[in-house]
Image (cartoon, one colour):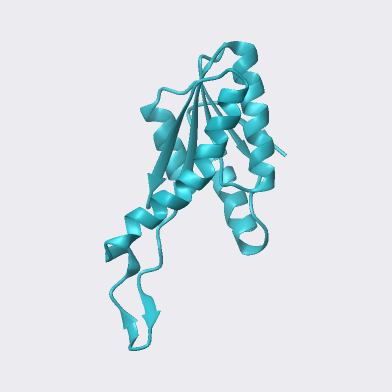
Length: 148
């Protein structure tokens, strides 16, 4: 049925539930697993004592900081997969909106199924991530399993 499953995570409690359900499905189907997190684009500029300055995304630390943050989400997810006897590939997509990064990764990895949650974090981010899930549902050519 599904041979390669892409599981999207943002580190929220709900996305952890999505990860566990996706891994359970992958184990039952003996499917390959890719776990992806997407770092959305940073604001254009950052404020310092002198006013608006060069954008953080142009600084040498930007990519390293974003990668470190992503690995803090991906390493435990990979460990969870391995604890269940699954080999998981982890993917960090930098400077993309969640829906774009998830859809592009699913295409690049030839995924048969995308597993993601209906929303992630709280507040405004929750609304944005919920809209990203809706966008993946609307645009993906790959089936999407949404975990609530």
